[in-house]
Image (cartoon, rainbow, N blue to C red):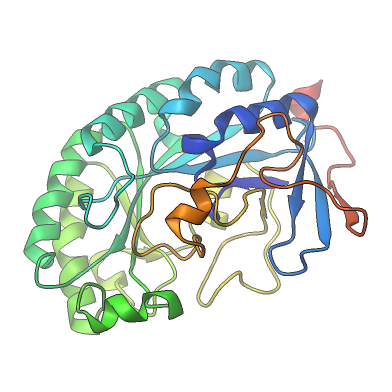
Length: 307
C-alpha cells in the first residue's frame, strides 16, 4: 500500500506530530471527503505500508522524525514544492532559501532518489512570463543540483474557485504555444543539472523537449524505488497517471493559503478557528455514532525485509 500525505493538506508542515503518533499506533482514521459518514481505518504499520510519500512545501517540521521512521522500517519518500512566487501568491509559505536548505537536508538523510522536487503550478501572466520562469528555474536548479534526480511540474488549472482570479488576469490557462515555450526553456536547464523533468496532468505534449507526461506517483517512479503498486481503474482526475494510493489528509487544514489551491474551501478565518489534537486518531474531527468504519489494509504476506 502506498500512503500519500498528502494532496489535501500539508501534513509535514502543519501536522507532523499527528502523523508520527499515527505511525506509532499503527493506524489513522480518515473521513471520506465525499461520503462524509464513511471513515477509513488505514493500516500504517510498516508491514503494510510499501511507501509513505510526504508531499510538502515545508519539510522542516518532519526532519527530526526521519531517523525514527527509518528505525521503524518505514519506507519514506518526499515530494517538496519550491516555486518562484512570493507572498502575493503563496502567503503562508516560508522563505524559499530555507525550504531549499531543508530539501538538501532531507536528501542527505533519505537519498536523492527519494527526494523529488515539484515546480508547480507554473503560472503565466504579465508578471510571471516565460523569461521569468527560465531565470528562476535555473536559480532553483542550481540550489538543488545533486540533491534530486527528478523535477515535476504542471500548469495552473482554472477550477471553479479560481474564476474570480482568472477574470482579474492573475491566473489563466496556458496556451499550447506557451506550454511549448516553457518546455523548451526548462528542459535544457534540468538536463544540465542532472534532473529528469516530468509533466503532470496536462493536455500539452512536451515530449519533443524530452519531457515525459507521468503521474506524480507514477509507475515509473515506483519501479525505480522497488515499490509494489496497483494501477488505478479510474484516474483521480483528468489525465492523472498516478498509481493507486491512499491519501490520509483532510481538506481545509492547510495554512499556506496559496491562491491557486483547490484544497482549501473555507475562509482563512474559519480554518484558524479549528482546533487540532495531535493525539487524535483523525487529523480533524471525531468519529460519530452514525459513521461507518471501513478497514483499509492490503498486505497479507510479509515483506522480504521482515525476515
